[in-house]
Amino acid sequence: MRAIRVGRVTARRRRSMASVAWRQVRRRVLPSVWFQLVALCVLAAAISVASVEYYAWVPSADFVLVLIIGGYLLRPRQLAALYVVVSAALLWSQVQRLPAGVNKGVLVVLVVVAALMWVVARDRARLGLQGLAGENMLIDLRDRLRAQGVVPSLPGGWRAETVLRSAYGDSFSGDFLVTSRTTDGRHLEAALVDVSGKGVAAGTRSLLLSGAFGGLLGAMPAAGFLDVANQYLLRQRWHEGFATAVHLELDLVTGRYRIGSAGHPPAAHFKAGSGRWQLVDTSPGPLLGVLDDATFPGASGTVGRGDALLLYTDGVVEIPGRDLGLGIDRMLGQAERLVRDGFAGGAQRTVESALAGETDDRALVLIWRE
Image (tube, rainbow, N blue to C red; front, side, top):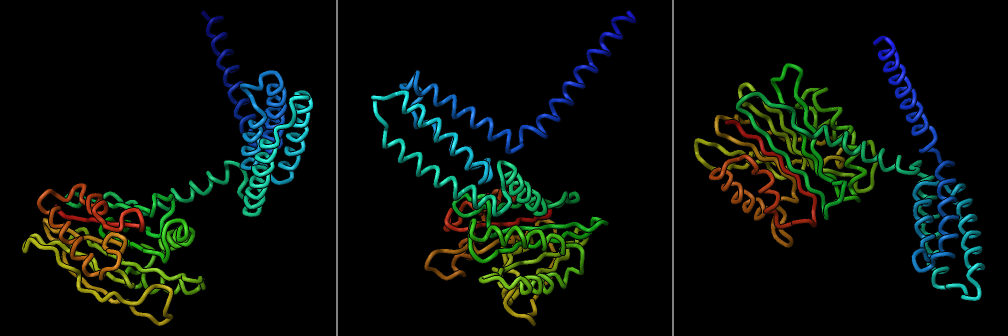
């Protein structure tokens, strides 16, 4: 029995050592540029040989695959070396197939693809984004910043839904949401921001601002959030670097709230007592990043039992060629259905009913008290 136990321990140790060794290889060798270059060179050589023996199945056009992969994974210096290897492999395969002749159409395609991938590799190297790590870094950054917009868990009796949709389904949006709940759990803060532009064009500014505004939220008095956000935007000195924003501070015990606006469409408050939606009475105020001495108006109210608050961006209410007020009236008409059908799932239904559709970024926050 002792010998069996010793054998099992030895086997586990061997498996553990093998696992550690594989992780070391995967971390140090597989991601390395030189390993990728060698692998692509071997693939080019294999295509060259196969195109001679089995041309009907492996034509010379398959070298395009090597060029595209190399353009995304390699730095310009290594990509140049790959081009030399691919050229030699292609030349050898064409010579072996004589007198069938050289397929000039394939050569033209390969040259065009090589030129395009060279531009891609050069731009990625200039930005410091090499291989799949570049995309992974951007995706991780985007996901981390989006996590700041997830509404924290709320106490019993409170519910919240958020929906953010980018124009044309792009991964990056000019609309973003940041939220924070105080350490004592009593107050919830949320800022819904609409950066100038839409989709990818506004995505870089949106990423930067969401990180900065997320750091401000909850770290300073709520009444001064829009003032500090305005100063931050002014310091960036961006061309077309303005934004609109609506800021909410909500007391989760009493239901008291304060809403501040910076050039943003007015929030809406459903009052169960009257059974109607009403716009929160705040003037829109100046845009963020435009005036140095700007002041931002605010309004207060109370969310009672059965009440709801609705924050949204202009993409939800804009109607091409029509006044914004008409779009707000239409949205409130859609919101009346939430009273009948229930608020759950109402954020998504309201966004999907927007006439702007996929042509504009859309964001909406729905908070209600049961």
